[in-house]
Image (cartoon, rainbow over the protein chains, first blue to last red):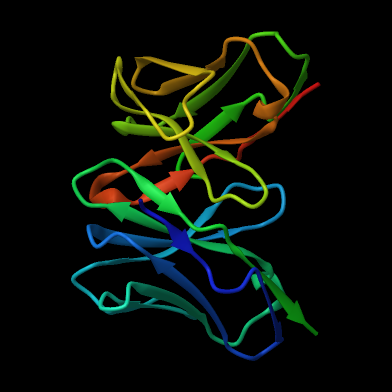
Amino acid sequence: GESVGLHLPTLSVQEGDNSIINCAYSNSASDYFIWYKQESGKGPQFIIDIRSNMDKRQGQRVTVLLNKTVKHLSLQIAATQPGDSAVYFCAVHLSGTYKYIFGTGTRLKVLA
Amino acid sequence: DAGITQSPRHKVTETGTPVTLRCHQTENHRYMYWYRQDPGHGLRLIHYSYGVKDTDKGEVSDGYSVSRSKTEDFLLTLESATSSQTSVYFCAISVQDNEQFFGPGTRLTVL
């Protein structure tokens, strides 16, 4: 079956350092990937996405890397700030369907 | 929030009572979804809709029904609420190119 997993449930980083959050997926028919940020008591917030025909995409302070060979996705946050503290999870869209599979999330803690 | 609202935002109810959650969007997107979010699980799809009166089941649809009589509204109904349906419920829309955006959520407690 399909699954999406994250390597670490919690990640603590010093303010100003870079953060890397990982996601692994199982379905080769995945064609689109999204990273979300979720703060306590709020809905998931779209951060950045990438399609399967790309291997890297950059946004403002965030970069997503996609390695289709090993079915691995990562989110890099540059110069992590206190406001980045949240749960981050990835979503994987299954080609030809309306369906997305979600990871369980990594809680990012930013240490002052 | 991509023009998505959910109501109510919080609800406490008793086992066996019916509950309806509402999702409203302002931008006439075709695809709408209901998910539940529980500790230790990723978001799980309950039902989704690909148009007015066009709906289909997700992976955790037992005990839930949906209706979509207008493009802008997608209703989720728990016919007879159970304690296992205590959860946070999120509505989402999918726009062109598959980008998916979420509403603020409804926290439901079934006693």
